[in-house]
Structures are given as C-alpha cells and as structure tokens.
Image (cartoon, rainbow, N blue to C red):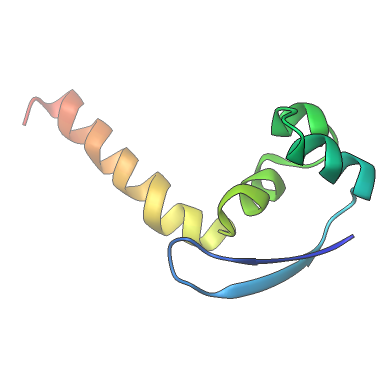
Length: 77
C-alpha cells in the first residue's frame, strides 16, 4: 500500500510503499495499537505512519539529542 505523509520535523512529504492492507489501517484508525495493527512493519515503518519521519530525520532530531543527553547524565555535567 502506498502511503504519503508529511514529516512533523521538517515538513518534507514522503511516499512509501508499505506491506500492509486497508484492513490493518482500519484496525489502527479504530484504536488498535500500531504494533498490533501492523505486526509485520519495522519500527521505522511504524514511526513513519505516526510522524511522517524517516530514519535520517529520526536520527537527526531524536536519537542524536537523546544520546547527547544520556552522555551528559553519565558524565555528571
């Protein structure tokens, strides 16, 4: 299924072909947890559905700042 989303971080619009069905989408929209509605999707694919962000943006805006924060905590700064 082709899915188009706008990144909540950059506003960039991406279109991905995801291995999912319209029934799975309906289950998710009707309240099923995303990991239950789309058990075969990767974490990155599910994150794309939630935020529109792909790996490169996730690494830039979430993972790197989080790692820097954890380093500060462990160094006592």
